[in-house]
Image (cartoon, rainbow, N blue to C red; front, top):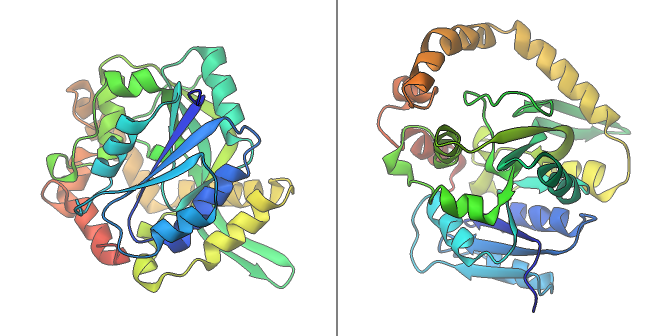
Length: 307
């Protein structure tokens, strides 16, 4: 079989109730020359059966023999198995919009950038109230093409798109206990500091519904919000005006919050000097809030019941 154009790597652990929406979002994409490599961190639920139920030869499931308790190892294994020219990640609780793959491919080929980061909606709440959709959301990552890379911003791995050779060139993700910030943000920062060019997409093509922000989200195995988001923006062909309006309102509230004002001060007086020293700008904040290396990951694992 010829190699696919795009390899999609998805790390997962006992979250088949969310993973099914991630897979369905890939299948809904207009660009279809891809392979999806789903790597289980020693899953013990019905993940294997769920993946098999899609009956698509482009999707394969690899389950690790032992649980690493982290996202980095499964993603490293997935990259090692990838056969595509380009590489994309998809977290188990995120969803591509139908234009994501074709837009990211066009953008990276046109700009000749090493890494392109998608614009995404970070949805904290979504529900259907009778005939009205209620959404709380903000922008994720950068929001305009050509914008200078901002390492202090959160660039969820689902938003990355790169040549597979770029991923290999800058090495594997470091494990959680080796870094104060998350392995994904650590990897992107290190690649950028070593010379990788990073560009942003201005078009919204990705939905993130962070399970870490939802108490016991894995233990309860609920997916009502994912179903609402999938039905509203992936399954249907409706425009994104409702979502964009929610993002605009969410960004307005964010700008006016004391937390955001404090963050801007932190970026100027702490983040910039740390970046100049090749230290991730959010390191001090992670130390103060979570303590030791890997502390943030351990905190969210406990909150969500994921391990």
